[in-house]
Length: 396
Image (cartoon, rainbow, N blue to C red):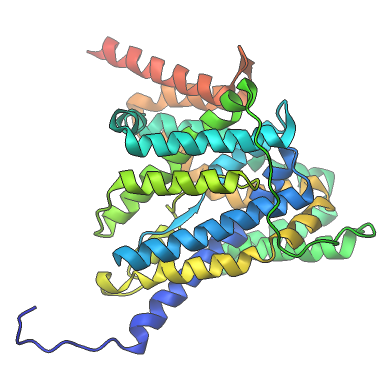
């Protein structure tokens, strides 16, 4: 702008539009996947208090990250939790050592993310994983959980049918809110059919519960490494791509270090990994937040404040879900992840030359096998990459 050009004062719309977009991003992100998080922490051995603490700690971390970073750099960079990582944890279940071992695995994954920001070869190694293979691994992790709605419909049709119907109607008339609508209907169904034992809701005021981490080879290999890989490949790298597509170039190293340190802090209270937002980042960084790219940064600030407010209900939600039928909770979690499964499968099968390696990765990961104490995602990743290299050499 020329020195003599008039400077337009910010209008109410300059702040209101990004604030509304940021609040929407947080509400959609939270309401769509908090059941996945709580169900995964519970499956990992957490008590309702520990699960509530884990979700609460991550909401606080996301609040601080979103508000401080966006305010500081005046760029609409936004953060979220690792939904694919938690979906994977839900399929793995409780490791040897119980929930303290899960907290240790979260801490190891956080340390690896910090190292990725500090050691450039490690970042390049993660970035070198072929997109088709990474997507196939993610799809294999999600498959079992995404079958839960069908299983619930067969085993408890009177309970599951209203939830599925609400989700389908939401897709038809309000696509963005389809999963939150299904969550709302699930809450109504559970309220009408679930008997809460006396004292089930005692101590549901939000509180941070310290979890002393324990470290075991089983948890590190079966939980920490897959969560690290899927968080980097399915959340952080796509998050950078979303920002770039909207005209923003961010330095990945500081972001990885910040999210890794935040994840290490939340791990001590049972919290899972935080990362760059990918899907909801498009709301905060896109034209929906503001037509002017320089005026979109308040969106993540509003998202951060909203996450903190939503976190206040974490312990109550954890107590309610702990008393609910697990199959029904897994069903609504599966509905929340169907779009992620569809996107992952589309990305895995996009390139013809990588389809067979991707399918090998997909079925190996979905099989749930454990060889030498190492879980299926690792073997799926290794097998898919090995076959891809072999086929490329043969073609050459």
